[in-house]
Image (cartoon, rainbow, N blue to C red; front, top):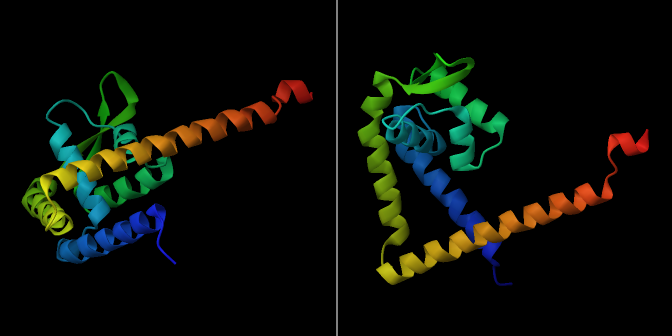
Length: 161
């Protein structure tokens, strides 16, 4: 039986995670953690980075983002600092260790990209990116449809009482 798009994406995702985890193991971080570190380092120059930014950028649930950030904090890669305007908000600040990891993280991301795109033309790479972006939009649209259908079939609490 021929693999469908979802199966191919799942295989690629698993292979990328395995490869990155193996390349980064000696640093004591995972592939996902490396991408979060990269994001924080790239965006903290523009202003404070918050957990909700990580959740949005990586489309993570609050609990998943919390787990990743807690490990990074525990390992001394980031720290959370209160924001003057709102003590409830904590900005994610890279530590010296994060800065030292930056070169290795970037190198890992570049190697992964080179492995993925070897023997592909620029046109093929661009087409893949456009196709993947459209697939993501399709899934987002499907989620919104399911949510609105669920809301339409589930009565409000006030209606039941």
